[in-house]
Length: 212
Image (tube, rainbow, N blue to C red; front, side):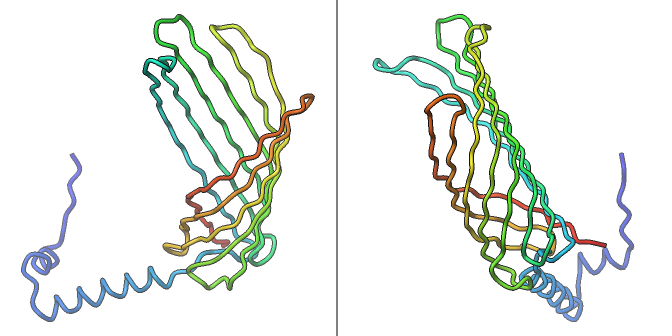
């Protein structure tokens, strides 16, 4: 097994610090904390941003008035963007959703897969030096949907969607930002008169890569 070697004098400071050494440790900790609160994100021209999320859910339905079933869904989302100008970014986003429904006592299952790819643009309103910033964005995506039941192909659907979003980001340091946003999504199924409208609240994580 790997071992970590700590110098004796450092071990002595950690185990039995003097009052002066303790004051230095406290000042160092406070300095690091203040640096974290003063950190800003990289939202200036030439920088990159990447992010994404993963979710898994499992739902059981039961009861006298329900169809006893188990519903599973896996949602994977990723995005990447580039700042062409200060506080203005554009990029692509990819999303994959796998869902499966199994009815208790029946053979086989219903499976649905959704794939989407699109582009987005985002604008940050406040100064780039702010640790907390506000933003708004818009995007468009192409979606491809497949479904099958008990191993039989049930067909394919294609859709176009557009979205608008607005929210806030808190930069934990110069690279990582936590986002909270509200989004509106409108999806039109091609070749069918079907339109879906969705309002969403999202919490996400973005990593900002500073240019060299």
